[in-house]
Amino acid sequence: MTTFTAALTLAQALIRIPSPSGAEGPIVSYIQRVMHELGYDEVHVDELGSITASIYGNRPGLSLLLDSHIDTVEVANRGQWSVDPYGALIIDGSLYGRGAADMKGAAASMIASVARFKEIHGNDFAGSVHVSCTVCEECFEGYAAALVAAHTKADVVIIGEASELDLKRGQRGRAEIVLTTYGQSCHSSSPQRGSNAIVAMDKILGRILALPTPSCPILGAGILVPTDIISRPYPGRSVVPDRTTVTFDRRLLVGESRESVLQPIKAVIEEEGIEASVSFQESEMESYTKATIKAERFFDAWVLDDEAPLVQLGLDALHKQASERSSPTIASAPTPATTLGPWAYLPSALAPGPRRWPTPPMSESRSQTLSVRMTATSP
Image 1 (cartoon, rainbow, N blue to C red):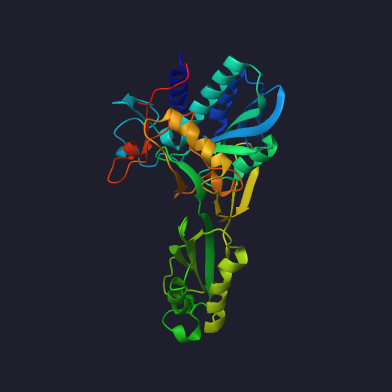
Image 2: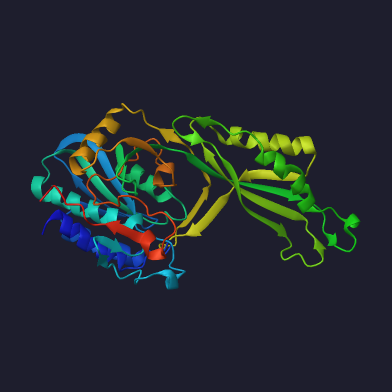
């Protein structure tokens, strides 16, 4: 069986196992069995439930981590699928299924390729190679991957997210900002008896959205976009709200800090004399191992230089695999690299990864496809 066929077969098997965030136990058990059968030197499941397989060379060298995540979002709109989201069907050269592109296809390719490398070379190489399948990425991008990188002492990280087969050498950071204005609740028939938190929010929201944000020629603009607004009590039946909260998505550039991001908003609040608070969102969830994940939603931006040795090495490897020449570009969507910032974010040169994300309009199933037309260069 070729490496490509082995990877494709494994990808189909992974797609057929539902693995929404927080419920990855069954797929981890399956991957653990596969990794042992493939002859990895070590297979490790950490406290969150992420699984990592390792091979070790007989000479000193770098630690290389090939990272993927195996959780997916739920299938909440099954009626929009033209195929079974867990059927893993191959139609006209594309593999269909929840997680095919994001990112069970890459996980399968990495597992199969490193196993093949081990079969050919044994332990006659320098350093170590690790393949991680992390959990809860859809909710906490990069949190679990950072734990794996620390465990493997990774010097270099390759992430198999969809990249149009371009090498991604940087990424904007991301923060979720929570702004709350406060008032005093009363019956809406006598609003003068209280203080309306919505009115307070109205006084500052426009100014905040008009605040200038930084930009740079590589990463683009550090945008600030409101994504949610809600008042308390909700629904507010005949009650003046005492609290209104707006959530913002803020894309970050290199050099921005927690203080520099929040300070302009705090200045507007102070100038308007509004009772309000602003902070970064904190989220919490339980992994399938019952471990608690709790993190602040602030992830730094990062960029590697075009001429960095790691970037050039990645380009050379990618050119040998792809029929079209790649170029170093910037990742636009959130990936585990938001937490792995000091390491490299590269497409997997070993994986038969997706050419690109489909663009709307599309059926739900079209957004979960992986091209399987590429041929593997290794046996």
